[in-house]
Amino acid sequence: MSVSHRRGLHWIACFEAGKGLLVLLLGCGALSLLGHDVHHIAVQIAHHLGLDHGHHYASIFLKLLENVNDKTLQLLALFAAAYSTLRFAEAYGLWKEKNWAKWLAIISGGLYLPFEGMKLVEHFTWFKFAITAGNLVIVIYLVVIKIRD
Image (cartoon, rainbow, N blue to C red; front, side):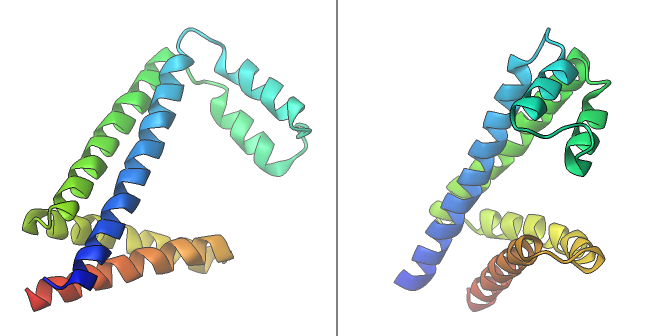
């Protein structure tokens, strides 16, 4: 494998590890809220940020949190742990240039693309475009590497 392909795999591995770390931190945040009134905390945060109940996104966020309980927080934390474990395993495998990790990255990245594309068509934003384009580039890059292998 060429040095440039190795660097590309290392970059993707760092990206996947970063996603895993972010979701793991969110899961820890969910666990830290056990036993607390999540909706009340969210209302206080929204008020502190100057987002009143009339703000569209704040009202959607607060509505979602109305019925959050400890069971929901535990399930979110469990999902975060599973997702981050998968991302860390993928990152390790890509860093070590393992064949299974390349396939895992192609499949997991490819599964998101149709949904990201639909969301992009439904409501275009440059952020959604960047995420979709980035995932598409990663999947194509890994497919090219697999073909060359």
